[in-house]
Length: 249
Ligand code: PTJ
Image (cartoon, rainbow, N blue to C red; front, side, top):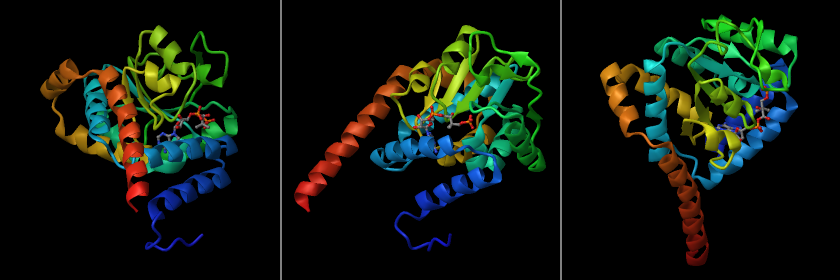
């Protein structure tokens, strides 16, 4: 579909189109469109921008991955449809391999996502030769070289019990989720309340800038509870402003 650049919702519509393409290519599932709609709604009431609390969490996420022994970036259908190229770039910048891990499991889709990332130059794990004990659904299928032995896992765009289980396995979890109220957002060690389409490019820049020394300092000062609180307050403040704008119009 041709979307004119002058359209007031150009970026949002282009992102939608990417996801629709992802479904057509067999990378994402139809449920991914519903999940995206939820994300869009939160993005809207957050003002569709990278807030200071998101940037702070992105810096902490990069710091955590820089200091990790085995950082891994988990990729699902939505993430692969929206930011495949950027995920490969981040993976290289942080020396953190990508692992395909999907909720609505099919071997064919795992391979399609892996192929797309590999074509872009990514190091991708998708052997599925190990199981993460404690999870009953398909996300338990992991790669013994990746999530199984990882000490830090970046999990973009998911809500469910995996974050809790990963933590029970002693791993630190970084979530990217526009919904600060989701279980994953509340349980993660670092929660990036931002659109993945903005968060990953920003993280690539931080990965180039932050030294290991700085990483330690960033983590010493970081408090995820405060970040979550600020995200929820940002929604409240944005809605208050919108209500005032209605009255003043
Ligand atoms: O490819 P699969 O099979 O692994 O399936 C992927 C989906 C996304 C369908 C699956 O993980 C799922 O059902 O996710 P949930 O439980 O709907 O959670 C997705 C979360 O991501 C929600 O809290 C959304 O608000 C959030 N979200 C959606 N789009 C974005 C987003 N967060 C950041 N950026 C987005 N673009």
